[in-house]
Amino acid sequence: MARRSRHNGHDKYKMRINSLFDSYNEDNNPESQAHSAKYLAVLVSGYLEQAIKEVLLNYSSLGSRPQIAKYIESTWPISRNMSADNINNILSHFNTHWSEKFSDWLKDDIIRKSHINSIVQWRNSIAHGQESNTTGVTLVSVRDSFITIKELVKFIEETVKS
Image (cartoon, rainbow, N blue to C red; front, side, top):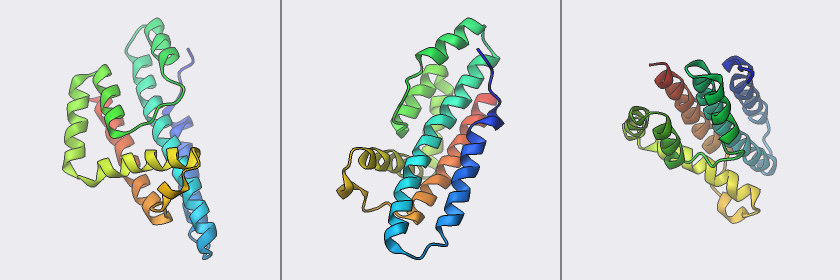
């Protein structure tokens, strides 16, 4: 199994999303802003999924036999809705202490869980053509969720190191 550097994956994805936010903020057309916000919601949800996967797979490759790391990577779902509950469940499979820390992290700021779950719900609604469920998708709301998700990824990176 080829080990991936953390800096070759989700950090580049994060920089791309930041750059898109900057370019879309210059657009004053409300309709194109709405489309841009939906596109960013899908990207942010993908970033959440890929960053968590990358951090945890990297962790598994550092401290285990190659066969175990390969098994974890090969059994990881191709796509997973990274709701707060699913993240908690995944963390508990690795380490129950991580799951408890994550629950505490969510409780420290009640909006965190909403941001995480909203971005996943928006992505699903967009992907399944349920436009009526995307009225809250704006550049501001997606950016707010992205800020929380970047904090979450940093939190998980620090948690697996401790």
